[in-house]
View 1: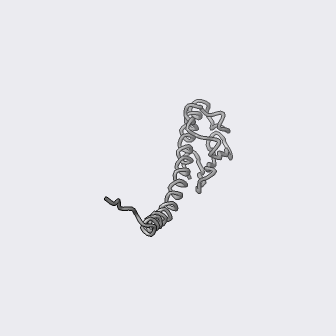
View 2 (view 1 turned 90 degrees about the horizontal axis):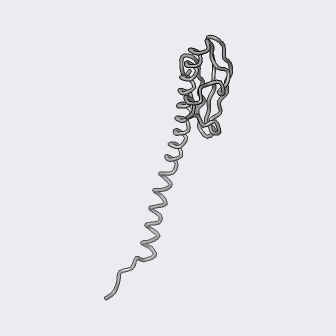
Length: 115
């Protein structure tokens, strides 16, 4: 009894189809990854906004640095991956800029939320 084996041409056709599918799929995965990085930065901005509100209720002004904020509230901010810049902080206003090192968007945060 003979066993049926695949020919070299059949194997090459299957590999070519897999290659075409991979070429179509990988760019969309890269876009989804960048969007995930931006979502992480946006989530961090929302956490900082909440922490700033809590800080203002306690001290009467906004915090001037990330270290002044409650670490339990901003624990989800990965500062090794997200660049956080406190531009200004006064009694009535603050501005924080956030950007993920691999993301595409820059977020500007103030007392009213994301700007």
